[in-house]
Length: 243
Image (tube, rainbow, N blue to C red):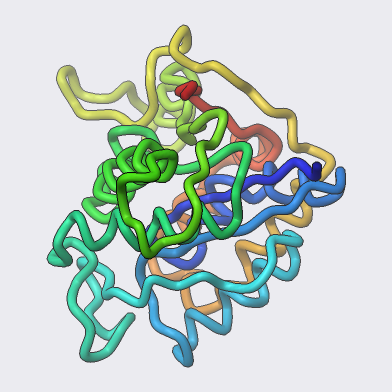
């Protein structure tokens, strides 16, 4: 049976920034890979950009839940914000995608949502609940046959890397008590060297042309000094939760 990976993300471009190297690596190794994106609507510019990025990464067609970004209602005109959708409804939709893809592994963000974006934090909570619920035949009866992934991997950054890059960008250490991205280094379960796929990852990020230069996560990444940017493009880190 073919190994399969499903990534659950908040916005178009997150699939490339957080898990692009992982998706490209496993696609090249013959795995089935797929991405669910919780915000953004079909027919929009960002949906078209997502389609191009997924093609570059070998991750199939877009799977859009169709809700609006917490900070950009135009991302899904006329649709509710992702944060305002009843939690059980969101979990049920994700269960449907998990049971359809039947992944061995699900990828999403850590509990801080990577860097604290409310959509990311909400995706983490919903994905965690959906991975657990998908294996029960008593739950979400209309969402397909039960399926239990082997593990959930939470995309994160080692705290030592965050601190080092913080100095490189801002010229000083973080303020005491400041909420930083990432987790203590000893909580990182898997560190993937994706340097072979870093150019594909970079190309997938730039497929999201509307985000380039907008002040988004990708702009912050491009502002890093070259050694730091290379490290971020060439490595992806995860915490593992087994089921």
